[in-house]
Amino acid sequence: MLKYKNQIGLFLVAIIWGTGFVATEIALQQYHVLQILALRFLLAAVLMALFFHKNLKQIKKSTVKKGAILGSVLYLAFLFQTIGLTYTTASKNAFLTAVNVVLVPVIGTLFLKLPLARNVVIGAVFSLIGIGFLSLEGLNGLNLGDGLTLICAVLFALQILLTNTFLKNEDAIALTLMQLTVAALLALVVSLILGYPLITFNVTGNLAVFYLGAVSTMLGFLIQTICQKQVSSNQTAVILSTEALFGMLASIIFLHEAVTFKMIIGALLIFAGVIVTVWQPKKILS
Image 1: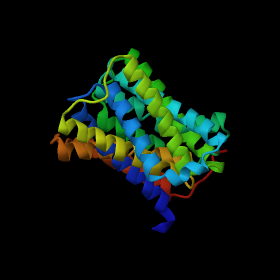
Image 2: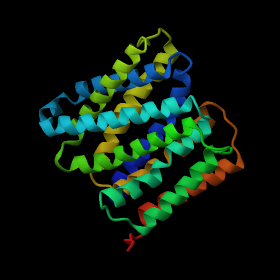
Image 3: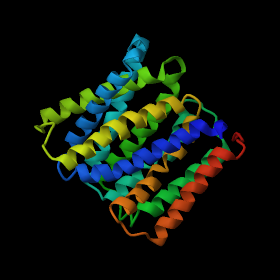
Image 4: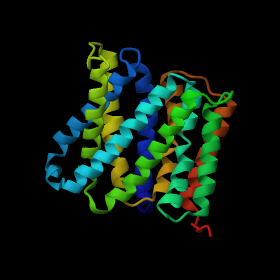
């Protein structure tokens, strides 16, 4: 079991992010999406600084530079996803975002010359098809929102790949802190410039935002960064694709959404993809 502790940690991240869909649904009843982005990143950065202030001394010039790049990519990914959602359906938005599970090995191989294992390719395809079963009701042609969401998928793939690259000579906690701080500053500026105040006085909405900031963002990205030190970017992408599955389960439990046969097929395909990726011997494609 200890052999797979980092993979298990990434599964935990997927669970955290999956349950974040429910918190987002609740928060959206009281907040604009730009407010939610600003609050979740700001809260995450502040909590990181409070809980891990001893790691501040690990921040070097290189940490600031790398954190600025990661934070910018992360915020832009969320921003494009959010804007894309206003022009397309939620199901297409979720599916096209999940295309990053295939983009990570493709970009990594073509541009970063990373080795590509056969089982990762098979696992990524299985997971993508499974996510399609969970989220798609029909493509009906591509539109502006779909294009923006695909940009978001590319950015999420870059975030995973860059995290693996940048971690080699950096403290994981310090790098996470810088990433979240930069994302928070960008989100705050955009929200305020567009005229959205940061707080509304609603207990349920504020609790949902607190969960998104403290758990989904701070804890989620912290665990991701720590675990990625020992897990390849390709494996990371496939494991994190189970976020869609856990989001579905959370919606069934907390929002009382109906279970369908398509959901069951999708769940089985995602799990098959993860099992193939993590546990089968890796053979490098020639």
